[in-house]
Picture 1: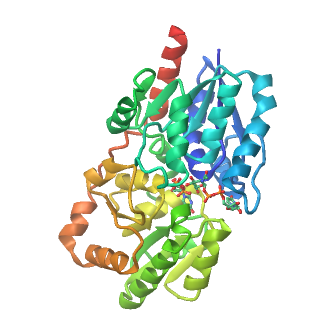
Picture 2: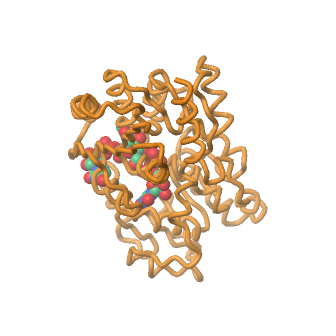
Picture 3: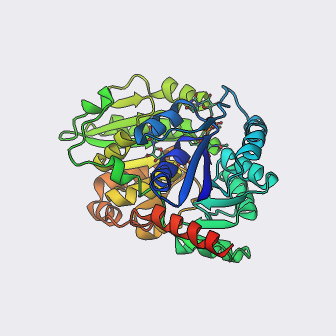
Length: 371
Ligand code: UD1
Ligand code: UDP
């Protein structure tokens, strides 16, 4: 048996790791253990509950006002004993959060092999996204196995001299759809279940990134207000991240408009089915850029760059930043220019076919058969 410990802590890691954990648990050659840091609490638990994944360990580190240093220190201290006792053959981490990097570093200290799921994404700007670009670069230095979602991410790793142990697998984000996306889905969230998709064009919004917390989110809120005023056919739905740095500006600026619905974060199935029914999406999320191409929904990315150029090449994603006038102009282009909308709403997803977990497990077995 290969003992695999999956360690994760935030919402996007959970959504993309749970389908893999389910596949690991179902594999007779693998002893699968889950440890969560709970860098996020409610948003993590929502995903764990939805997928029915029960962690063996829970570091429960989340604090209001946590900083990059406190998250890093708490993860490393919390994992030390646990890794010493469990001695997994392989630690799996995901993506680019501070949990991912700190867990990879802890595994290295414990001399456990590390597998990096969603490896090789890069912007080559160490402050954007911050701290994610550095987290993923450092995790690549530590990992033995690199599960690159695309050929492009494999090439990024190769350009850094990382050629061994690299597998192109697709992104496990798409594996999650088989648990979540249903044509006859009934929304769990009351506000979502009463949305009138027939009469309104529903625009889904999310924004939370640290780079956008010093003005960007406010600019986007002003753009949403302007669009809502100018277009009575629009209904905005914004599930607001639980970070106080996000909630304060969003509720201050948007709480009183009847066609701007602010909700708490919704569970993953509600979110995927909301994306699939939206007219287009305004977001700074990484994961949503990977998900939306499957639904053929245009995504306007509220950032200055993206580490997901495949979705831009596929035509679904456009990077527009957070300048209020630009957000309004790009949204209006999608509303008024049928050709532009059609060009961006073709459903083809460059991030895989929903079978990334199987490829990752095959690669793990190949690695342990040879080592
Ligand atoms: C983190 C990740 C980011 C990822 C994002 C996904 C880091 C440094 N950042 O950013 O890469 O894109 O998650 O959402 O790893 N909070 C709650 N309940 C929750 C979750 C968060 O109350 O379930 C509040 C807490 O007050 C917490 C704050 O949000 O202190 C910020 O959480 P944190 O994980 O530090 O930053 P995110 O912006 O969520
Ligand atoms: N998501 C969700 N509920 C919400 C908002 C987002 O389930 O209220 C999902 C979304 O579909 C995607 C993931 O959360 O799978 C993205 O997480 P987030 O934007 O927080 O992080 P990022 O991907 O930017 O790191």
